Image (cartoon, rainbow, N blue to C red; front, top):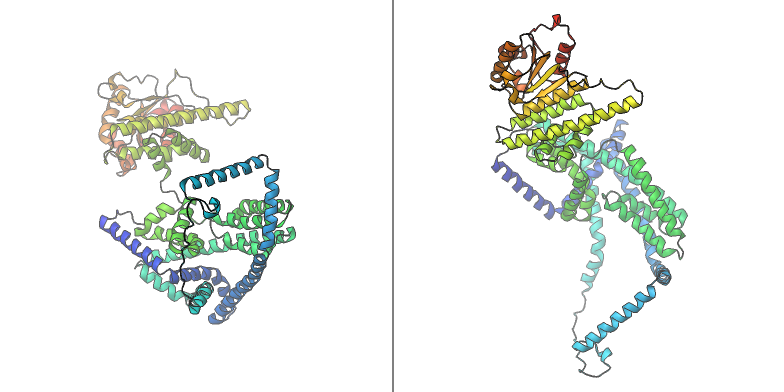
Length: 615
């Protein structure tokens, strides 16, 4: 994906094209809905067609066999389900009487129902009195007194046209049949010439064959896997539900199992609707409560097994969408295409998210709807610190430390976040912003230090020998970690101090004011074996050369490590940077600096002579 910022004119063109596309999809929904259904069905039917092709069957024969078999099975299932639905419709009066009896028994058994009934009668009486007082009472309520009976309006209705009546009866049947016929025709053509359709789409998408091919391959793979796994999950829910309802005695068990399989294609709402139908029927069929309770237990059991066992096992990879994106896509496609749009919402949006990954103008779709994090860990940490959200920054740090280690977090995330804060100077970052980041990072390090201390105490109490080295006494200082210029450099030195403390090295942190022109003369380096100067600036040569020259003049045997934490500082080579500044070594990572400083502490005085090196 290109990182080149888009021009305002380009953004307006993209928005205009999107609005035109949405309008075309809405106006032509009678054509696009069957075509979209055919494309999705072709994803499911392509594997069996390919298997028949490997047996040397001609493509036309393989497509005809697979499509005819599948639609014949669907038609047979629809016929059986339709008969059960008609039977249920014929039994509605009997179910209605049972439901009324059960409701009356409930109202008689519930405490206070008599009071509710009397309250309802009082409300009706008050309404009748108000109607009489305002003169709006019906003639039957006035007893023939008062106002005269108003004439009843008479309207002459034209005789119904037989052709119009026939059309009103046939349209609800012909429209679904017409849609089904279009789907079958589209499926045939898509499976007969998949390469031709793919080539035409690639040409329409643009001239970048590499990106378009990758996008189509990923979209086809992800949608095919989603549809296949969703079908298996739905079948493992609908079939046990139908069998269980049959043994419980709920009428139309096969109907409810088939509907549950279809409705679960609708995200979130589908499973709820699928469970409501059999529960409602169990309530109105059985005069008692056993059928309702057994149906409820069956639905809850199958739902728990499906959500916690079947779905995690079969869904090897997600659709690449966030839960909020699934809901928004369902609302959008439902408003656009109605009920078919609700069923097609997730697969169609998955295709759009994949296209947004490879087409620069559609990148915003992946940002809005994709499940991949849009900010790197260091960007998230910097944003939380800049916004003053210390609690969330600490939670992020604790999660990263638990997944790796303190050193890895400091080196890869915390130090990178400080580099972002330092680089924000060019974009107008204020001193207050940098100070806010520095203060937040100090609180974060303190929190991590408390966690490590508790871990050490726990390991010590448990008798484990894996505890970290004990912290050195305060009065002994082997290493000075000094910030180079400002608060951010001092915080970078704090990170190094935290790493060295974990290794049992006596360390002291000094702010950048300790090496200013006025402060460096009073800097106490007595007993110190090494000093590390921390710089986040991409060009630390000028600042570091002055400080190192003054320190060498005061303590010639003192080892000085230059912490050049910005990668741009090493573009000309770390060895050249060490020679230009006079440092004994240059480190671009906290781990490398900690190793150098630890070696200087453990080295004998004879071996501690300065020698230029680079890490």
